[in-house]
Length: 148
Ligand code: RTP
Ligand code: MG
Image (cartoon, rainbow, N blue to C red; front, side, top):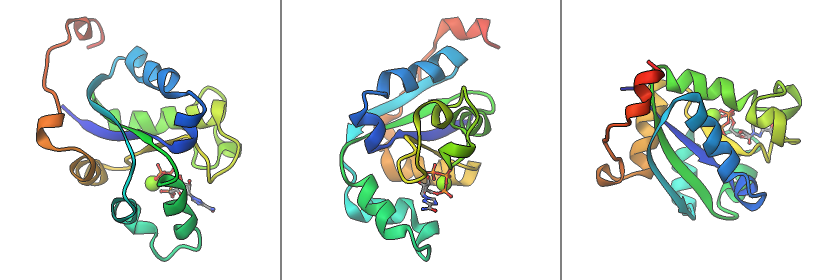
């Protein structure tokens, strides 16, 4: 089954949004496969956001994502990579629709509450960067028979 990497960013953790954000993906019908609260080392932040290395905001982005704990998660489900991006909303909260996570909780692009993988390739790469194999749990969830 398809998996994606999602992360409540330091602003979301500080604003007590872990529960609300996690609930949205549970209620949608996706399955949590791994989760942990963690501090991101600078080297991991630089690797994770490597695609933005040349951008003017790269330094700020790395400083922000390492400024406090994040809540890292792996979620599983049919089409979860694209659907989670829809549920997150546009990168700029000012352009994110109401009802999306960034639309409901964010104000500025720098503190936009959540990260999500943007493709199957980045999902595989980011899950590998943040989680060991033993931290990803394979289990049955019977209520999902009513989702699929
Ligand atoms: P993310 O990677 O965090 O899930 O966000 P995203 O795919 O929606 O956006 P992306 O283009 O990958 O940008 C990564 C993060 O960089 C910050 N950003 N700041 N100051 C700026 O103009 C600017 N542009 C992007 C945002 O926090 C964005 O989430
Ligand atoms: Mg991105």
